[in-house]
Length: 364
Image (tube, rainbow, N blue to C red; front, side, top):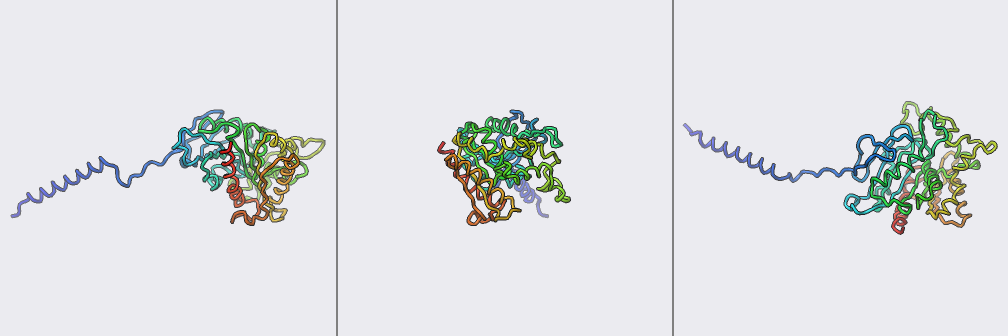
């Protein structure tokens, strides 16, 4: 009969080997263990903003959601930080406030264009401007849309919130504003209303003129208010880019758009092309981009071109320089730009603008 001792010894040795291996693994990290992903910096409530939930995204490209009494609902703010932000705790950065167009949302990752995420010497902040907020405190605060004080939200709350929570260069020389389409209007509007806040302003295919001589652009604003495109959305509902929210009066933002005995004065007061002298007196850097819509009056960029030209002509009459780019049908302006009112052109605008803005910040 065979002795059981050798088998028992083998089992004991095997158990010992397993225990030893367990202690080795317990006492040393696995070669394949991954470090936790860096998180976005923590931000504290303040300046009338209350955060809802935690930030989402990466350490350098994240979204916070806030509420404010100034504007009904919840609002997302996308923040893009340079790659070295966490590694340089003593460094401060200039800030570019980038204003999105109608029917967009900072929660959409597409608003973070590659040229913005590639920037290495500035912070970019993309605040919610509403589907048709028009970067303005509305005249009528009692519409179905609720409170709509977008200027108060951005200027009195978002800017100081960012300065309090991030390492910014909190001065005019370290702050710029730009935007596309509706946001292009917003950028010029804020720069003209608050010239002491910004050193640079850029309008990308912006609604740069609201005077009566550019009634088509007034009509575009009114169309977003009265939500005339919503019936074309079918079953896609709120996600449809033509659905701008509850229907409100055409007078809700600036009063009547009709020039009867000067009743449209608020539209004229908000008209960027009529107030370019404010930017000149402030010594602000001005950049304007436009295409030509291929000469098609049904293409929004066709009307953007003339509005942009009028804004430039106002600066030219003052002898004030600007960086004005009319890329026409888009030939040579990036592979995705065809001269229309489109993201392919705006992406190339930013490829041109962001390095120039970073250089201007560095020079300041």
